[in-house]
Length: 420
Image (cartoon, rainbow, N blue to C red):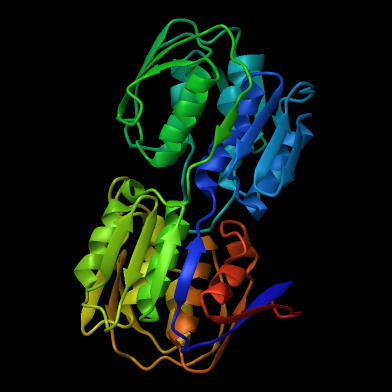
C-alpha cells in the first residue's frame, strides 16, 4: 500500500504536460471487440483503470500492451464473450464492452459494474437502448445476459443524457441493420472521441458532437490507429492547484474548449489566464473570490471537478456554495478536508464552504479518484505535513501525479505504508 507525504506551503511554478483522457481511453478500448486485428491508441495514460480494462479485454482473448503512452491491442482471437465480476467490479467503465459484444457476436454476459462509491448509477438506460435495437436482455445472478440474432436500427430517446448509455448504444448501433436515431444523447468530449474513432473504423455517423446522432449500420468495421484526447479533468486539477498555491503554471497538451466552464469560473475567482494554442497559463497572486458552482452535464461545470473546487474555496474571502446536481452523495472528501481545518457544512447536495480557515497538516483518507485529488490540493496549502492514504484511488485516474507536482515545486513523496 502506498501513501503520499506532502509538506504544504510551496508555490507551484513551471510547466506540466497533461496526459491522455482516462474516460475517453476507457470508451475507446472496448471498440477493439467490433473488428478483428491490431489497433494502436496513442496518448494513452499509464493508470490503473487502463490496466484493469486491459486485463478485462485479455480475459476475452485480446492482447493488450502499453509501451510508454502507446497502447497496442490485438483483437484477432476473441475467445470469450463474458466480462466476469472479478474484473468488472474494479470500475464502472467495464460495462462499455456490452454494446460491442452483442453487436458483433450476438451475445454478451457482463457483470453488473462496480466503481466509485458515490451513489447509485443504474444501467437501465444502457439496457433499454440495447433492447430497442432488438437485444434480449435478462438479469441473473448479478450478470447482464444479452442475446441477439441481429440488431435492427431504431429510434432511441435517452430520458437522461447519459455518457455511458450513449457510448454503449452507439457502439452497438454501428453494426445494426438499418438506421438508428439517438436523441438527448450525451455530448461529452469522450463521446465525440468515440464517435470519431468509429467513423475511422468505417462506421457511418452524423451529428457527432450534438445530442442528436444518426447512425447508418454497416456490415463490418476495421482496426485503426488513433490519437486520444487530453484529460480535461486532470488539466482542471492542475489549474486549480496553481491557483491555490498562488503560483504560475503552464498547463500543456490541453483542449481549451473542453474546459470552458472551468476556465470561466477560475477567471471569475480572480485568476489570470492566457491561452495559446494547446497551452493554458494560469497565474494567481491573491486569495480567490468566493464563487458558487453547480455541476451539470457537459458543457456545464463537471462533477469530476467538484471536489477540487471545494478545496479551492477553502481559501476564499467569504462563503461559497458548491452543489452537485449529478451525484447528490458525492461528498466523501468533505470530512477529510475538515480534518485539515476546513470549515464546511453540508446542506442536502450542497457544500457550504466558509473560506479563510487556518489549515494544518493531518492524515487523511481517499475515497474515490477526485476526492483523492482534492485532498492533495488541500495538503499543498496546509501548514506542515499531511499523509494521504489509499492513493490507489488516485492511481486509477491520474498518471504520476506526484512526479508532475514535484516538477512544479511541490514537496510530495510516494512512500510504502501499512496504514489503510
